[in-house]
Length: 542
Image (cartoon, rainbow, N blue to C red; front, top):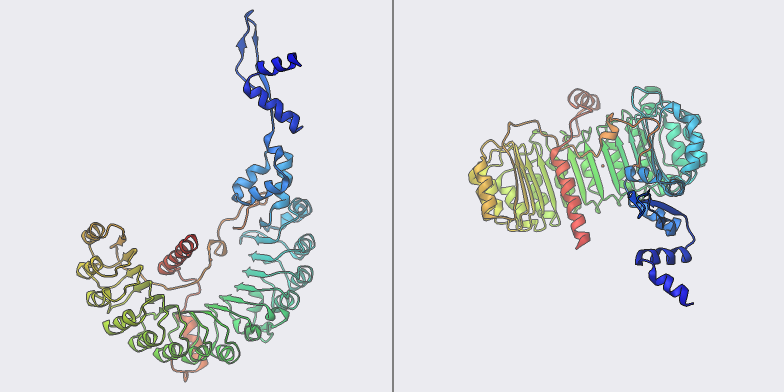
């Protein structure tokens, strides 16, 4: 016993710790080689010390949780460390994005043998390549029967047959998004008939329903109508074919219609008569008039409304919405400089919507009287954007500076204000955190420096460049949907946005000639999305 004690005492502290760990955890060791050193006789040797692999003590479940906190690139690098990490990373991955070219078909069995827990899948194919076909989609549906989210982009070889089989195999789908695909109404109806848990549906440029021969085929409602909460339709010629689905979705909370041709007044009338649960509505570049807006006013729970470049909407429709939708929190209006929405509509909003928190006015020409009413009555107004207005000058800013006590974010773009109006920011808007001024020629850099010195906590973003065409597009379409670059087939990434008397033909001609499908996205819309997300994150932290 004495000999063993003296031996342990003679060992260095580090060696004693390694000996203890090796006794408690029989695990693999790795050799650490120190620099070559000469011994007493002058011979050179390598000092090799065995070190345990401490990562082997981590259970697979804990290792999987760690991988979930990493981004896609770091996960890939971790999977190359050893066979165990390779297996754990594959079995714990739930999100997967694939380059959906036709050449991927032979690789699908081995691919989904490794990633056998995928529940959120994105399949993208660029325009210059041939996409996967029905056989590939059916194979994916067999191997990934637990999918809850599917995104299809540019999969032009898919047909109604493939979509029908997929829907039968993946009945637990909760979110479905497709863009630039060629299947038609039958494929879409198959998804709605079999996926009883579907909550979000996003359809963009679905070419199969743009064919005139299939215009009469209606879509929905199906069993999915009982669970759908969000519907987004973008750039469709026959978007009204989704009318039965929209009307039949009694739990629908969010409806977004972007650049869809055709008369939408009738659809909105039927929505107003049967769905009072709508909370958020986006109408962008649509053929809709005051008739449609008045119908939406029946949705008394409405909190968010975007009216973007709908030239037949006037003060009458906005007044009707304001009078009946008193819970309105966010209002975006792009009047397209038609002067059909102005003081009368905004006065009604100020009178009936005291909970307004965010107001965006683009191409609208209000006077100081309506802005003063909004500032006085809407005590919770935190975010305000005034863009492309010919009537918003120094007097308008001075009239609201002392009354917008809750305002935190202010964006002014393309308005005839000068340094005199900007000086009101030095003493007004007591809770202002950030101001952005762009394309206002009367504002100089000196006033920005003055504001920074007088209000050190205020963030001032000033750009006095030339004016430009303003667009209040609220579309969330990202680069992925607009022909962005895609990885090669071998790369797998994690998915990580008016008067009703006008004729229908005349209105359709107006929209086809005057509306562009692919307009640029709005700086203002993007700015407010960032502001809103930062506010929500700060509130959650607090």
